[in-house]
Amino acid sequence: MIIDTHAHLNFDVFDKDREKIIEKCHKNKVWVVNVGINFETSKKAVEIAERYKGMFASIGLHPLNLDTGLVKTKNEKERLEKTFDYQKYKKLTKNPKVIAIGEIGLDYYLKPKTKRRREIFKTKQKKLLFEELKLAKKLNLPVIFHCRMAHLDLIQFLKENKEVCPKKAVLHSFVGKIEELKEYLNFGYNIGFNGIIFKKIEGIDFEKIIKVAPLEKILVETDAPYLTPPQVKEKRNEPIFVKYIIKRIADIKNLEFEKVAEITFENAKKLFKIENS
Image (tube, helix red, strand yellow):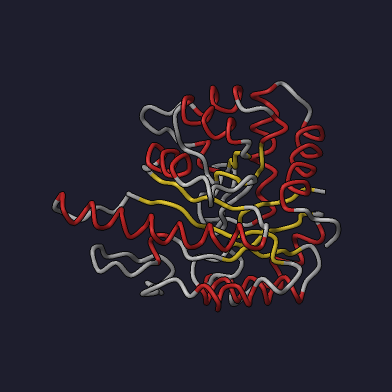
């Protein structure tokens, strides 16, 4: 078995052929965690998990889906929310196949033009994150962190807000420095790798990062429909392509594909407390 720990089959782009994609997952023995970025996509993730075996859900409000009024975003058709409705999201977690809170975190990719507006933007994201971490703490659920161009702030935030700092979490689509990787490992967190490891990003050595990251702390993911591995002809990513992430990690660590697949599968089961599909 293989598990794609971060996909978005709950997005509109899969509406026309979602069942076929899920059939492919079943045929290839791939389990999937579908991750919400707002209430609508979180609810959809839960509905998919209810309907299909091997499908699980994570619910949350992505930092760029918070309507700060300070930046423009095209994230999932700009389905923005003015505030985080704690009780409404909490109701979704009553379903036993909701296995995490996420993706939540900090995203500084889009920046307001002035320093003052940037500080307000960051403050609003941190306030949202605090509320979502409160929910994760209340429900004793692990967290799927989204962090883009904000690792130092996220690490500082977690150290300063120990009352909501999760014991279990994964850094989705990790793009950071070795020092930042080690900070997250010191928290006891898992590290998620996807198709971005095939890209060249200034200042980031993915091969070195993967070598340093203990296999027992690695999760594999696709972020489908995004970050399609270069081995794939299709433009849209799918959960079955997670095999290319496993193969790349295996090559870097000089291990067999089956070994990496087995351990990352067990890592996911342990983090998300998955007993069956």
